[in-house]
Image 1: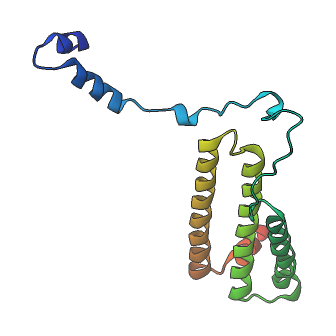
Image 2: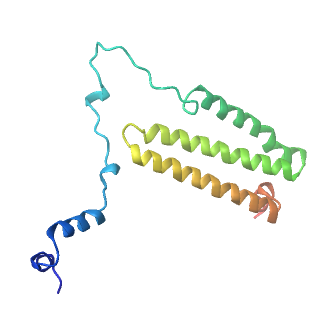
Image 3: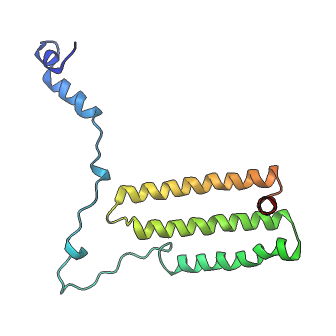
Length: 162
């Protein structure tokens, strides 16, 4: 049986080489640990001036406006095939895409709120990348659904009739 003691005691292998090999293959999980926060999340003293975070277009008022525009644009698209009886592929594809972006923005807001970057740095990035990957897969799913079948509204009608 091969053991580390027998490998170190051999004159052919140097102890430095063995330690370098073992350190190279050990995974570093330190980046997945939580970032320590001060008590009450107070970084400076109470008398320090407030330093607002750097502005971000996605997390600020532009993000809120973007979500509301997408939501309002979806209202007539939802009613068009069921009330007016218009079943056009462009209406179906537009509604499916807007619904996907509406869901993406909602999940992104959840990630921003519940997995903050200042506490969960690596997990925040991983969650954002997984959300983007899922959105890209869903875009491909919309494409397949629109080209091979009659789209989302036809799927909803078939499910409703069952």
